[in-house]
Amino acid sequence: MSYEASQSRYDNIKTRRVGHSGLILPEISLGLWHNFGSVDDFANQKAILHRAFDLGVFHFDLANNYGPIPGSAEENFGQHLRDGLAKYRDELIISSKAGYDMWPGPFGEWGSRKYLTASLDQSLKRMGLEYVDIFYSHRFDPNTPLEETMGALAKAVHDGKALYVGISSYSPADTARAKEILDGLGVPLTIHQPRYSMFDRTPENGLLTELERINVGAIVFSPLAQGLLTDRYFKGIPEGSRASKAVFLKENQVSEKYLTAALALNELAAARGQTLSQLALSWVLRKGIVSSALIGASSVAQLESNLAALDSPTLTQSELHAIEPLAIHGLG
Ligand code: NDP
Image (cartoon, rainbow, N blue to C red; front, side, top):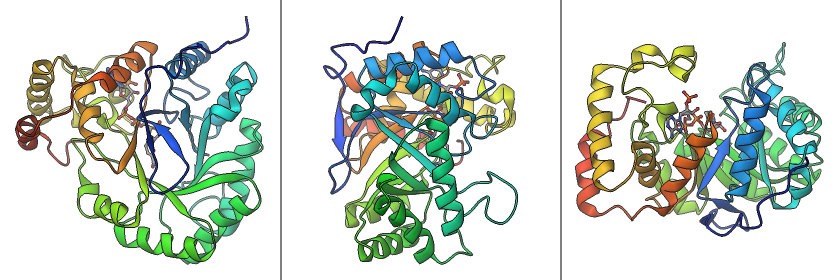
């Protein structure tokens, strides 16, 4: 049976405007870095995507290299679009990125005009799209002039292949330069995608302030520290969990120090009537400059539980104070 989205999909979702732009995002967006590759269960992917959209999550974040195998998340997403989501294309915000290793040779990664342009064409083909809503430079390239990388983003917009452009994991100074260059090209820098969670507070060292100054919105990735800010590892490392696969989340990150902090945060969350993951999401969303928290999910149940964070009471000053010694930079 073909997919029909829920009529009530916008009833409960909260949204935020991204900086000084027309772009609006759900406060929680869904990323396809893990769980959507060729090695992952296709029916489970579909169930997660449909449930997300039914609950008002209209932003899906991809990149050229998401898989495994690299590229397969975009291929699968293209199939999910064709299987039903595509009729809602005008409601969807779909992003892709280029920056990491994708194909052999000097033009298969980083920030050259050649790589970004070819990669976006490949991404569009894999997803069966005419344009993406947001195209990102996935990482700063220290060896390519920033003018060239930003020029490639601007070209994507001028060619009609992207509506908005963004950068990911750029320093505050490089962010300011990127904005200036893009302004000169008549294409605004709309969004920044940094990693931010209670266990990685790097953006507090100048980036969030810089984004406020230049009025560019943030969508923050891994707000659950890849699952560490949930109850996933309270009783060891479950089979099939991200830490059990030990590629991006190492088993030794599930340490005693980590567990002590996570259990204490879990108690604070319980006192608010929340789960730890819901507290972690409320915490990143306490910053107005954060337009959206970009989560991952390996099941519909995880997705639903995380979305319930949007019904949470606002964090009080005394709650924030209690969280402070437990939000330990470097555990994520
Ligand atoms: P999260 O921090 O949200 O981690 C998601 C993982 O946490 C899930 O796969 C799941 O792990 C676990 N989890 C989620 N919810 C629950 C729950 N309620 N209970 C128990 N466990 C839970 O984000 P990700 O690290 O997945 O990143 C999110 C997105 O951010 C990516 O998909 C991508 O789009 C983007 N990203 C961007 C990067 C960049 O360089 N710009 C880099 C990394 C990510 P499990 O699989 O073990 O069930």
